Length: 180
Ligand SMILES: [Zn+2]
Ligand SMILES: [Zn+2]
Image (tube, rainbow, N blue to C red; front, side, top):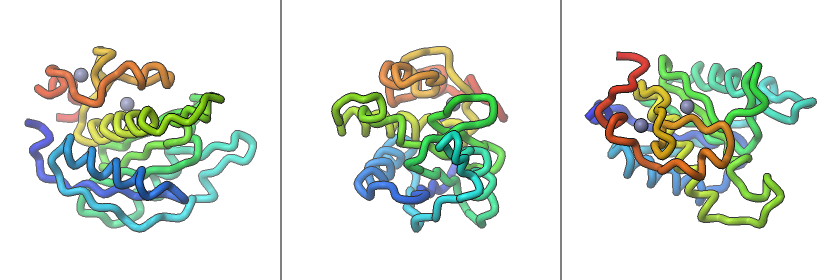
């Protein structure tokens, strides 16, 4: 299996992120990839990545910042600020497979963001899907056309809710690799 490759996975909270949410990600990433997962100390919010007008952080800038850090494994940043990349209104996350760094934002995964009542279990399911998706990219997987596969591209929260937290058979076989 492609994820048998031994790589440690670090989770880095960026700014304030709830501890139980980080622990849930740790557990589920460990379960999905059978890898050692470690939680890094909370990093401060990179102010130069924050766009006051948009009230969003540029995820590419944050990835660059994380990339300056020495690491012997993959790093998944978790942030509770809405993210964007130039040209897109928002992104749930972004991955840089070359440097083994990814980030997810939990802001749009909360029902409250959409003016709905809090639903913690739904929120956690979304967080896990987005985390597994970005780490899938770090292993070199590309997007999958199967809308039930975790590697399906989420354009909206509806897409995230409709896909599963697992890799489809084709992804498991590693047929959608970006980098070989
Ligand atoms: Zn993706
Ligand atoms: Zn797939």
